[in-house]
Length: 200
Ligand SMILES: NC(=O)c1ccc[n+]([C@@H]2O[C@H](COP(=O)([O-])OP(=O)(O)OC[C@H]3O[C@@H](n4cnc5c(N)ncnc54)[C@H](OP(=O)(O)O)[C@@H]3O)[C@@H](O)[C@H]2O)c1
Image (tube, rainbow, N blue to C red):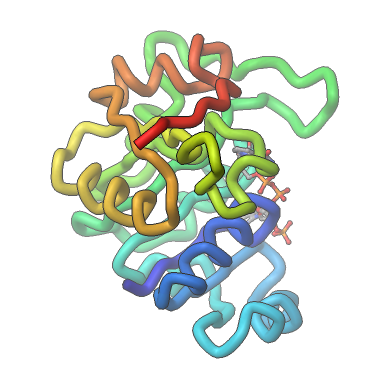
């Protein structure tokens, strides 16, 4: 697959490294432009490239990994996403400050809000509930595979993400819809930050 990233920081890079290790291509993007990502792309090797956000979403699958306050800004730059699978790895911190609060979205879960900003996208919430240090390394441990919770409204899109996560070595666990499962794994939910291993 070709995987596009919106954001090229800690989480995008962790997912990019897994993807490249398993033979996928990665197109990274940020707000400062492809030239700012050239050293990172070089470090990631021949299967990595840098582009604008609008170019990155032409990939087969897209990873949204920007800070929550930047989500509307990045969404506004994108062409319509006609069925593209978007992994929403964001957590709805209302600011980058250490005193950040959970953004108030009324009745919506975080990923329902994200989906409302990305018309046509098939949004799957995943990778948000794990701290980066549990995403970056090989998720296969002696005691079991790192559990990766996910949620989404489109079964095919979830299968795509489950397949990718399994290939990386995670143990994907489908929690249902963006409304029900998304609520469990989003910031403030009971499974947010829960790090578990699944024995095979
Ligand atoms: N770190 C964790 O442990 C962790 C774990 C799970 C989920 N998350 C969530 O994942 C998301 C990303 O976290 P992170 O730790 O990877 O953050 P990060 O390291 O700060 O990376 C954020 C990236 O977004 C880019 N960016 C900012 N504004 C943008 C815009 N308008 N358009 C495109 N790119 C933009 C930044 O690059 P420029 O500033 O150069 O544009 C940067 O590459 C957050 O929502 C976070 O809550 C984090």
